[in-house]
Length: 439
Image 1 (cartoon, one colour):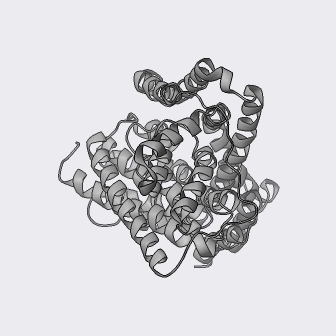
Image 2: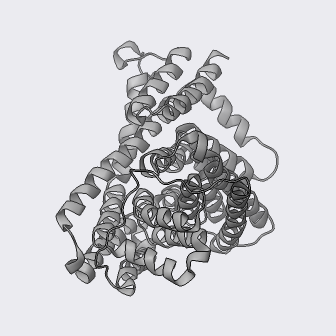
């Protein structure tokens, strides 16, 4: 009982401290300490008996294993995003979409811009940085309340694109290692779910904004608003080619190289961006350097919560919780979806949730004869639901650092679109797979 209190209390502590603005690299170990103390776990290896879990060993084991597995993907993904940004290619693609859709479709233009960049392999954080200045300009011209900008950015980045079949984002690639699938697993169902999330989520976003405008909310200008740069941008077609290169390489090599195909694909995207748009770079090597630092921060934040999960899964309460979730009556896909989503919520990371859950769940469900493609897609989509609770690194960065909003003002629409909509998408995916579609 005390262990369960520690597990739940540690998660709540992680959320509260993060919402108060504390760094994830601090809140992760601190929350893990809370879990360990209430569960009676030894704090240091020297205090533990042979084979007994301890705080430092469990935390650092989770932290380092995630870095070992995913550092190169984070590194190349961040560098690719930064070179797309520095060359103006990302802005060129976004501006082209805005021009085509027009001012009347300001919100749709932002969502589509984020979706194209995300599905092309640009890091989620970089997408938000790139599109935010244009989103701010569009919201200002349309006189829409700016507190909805984080929701528009997040909806276009972390819902119907991040976890869809073929996506180069790691949330679609982690299951491959454990299930022996491909990034295109369950693509028929994935397509249906993505269309549903896109249409329903956009309708909901527009409805929330319309209600706010009807209540008298308007755009409020701030003194520190970024000023849009007037700079020469590359041709949008030339800017799109690197995104196509990433998708093409990952498709060609996913069978032979599996997870490592993403490394080759992102490297190809970096090279293509440089070759096609090199005269537009402000500083290629500075972009590489900034991307490297961004990768270290991103993987550090994710690994910090994966480390918390490493401690959480070593306490008795975790096994009780997993057994309860995997024993849910009905389709095993339901238990898998709930388990991954809950663990992703605990860690505040979809990728971290998968990295913790799949080594435990995959063998169990594969032995039961669950279709690996169906499990891959359900796990991927469900990991993108509860992960977006307030302590999620992307949410904190987008709401506060990029958009300059408070959680109190901006999180409700973000939570609606990035928690509830993917949860509904998960339910739809389970229903479709249960009917035999895509299997």
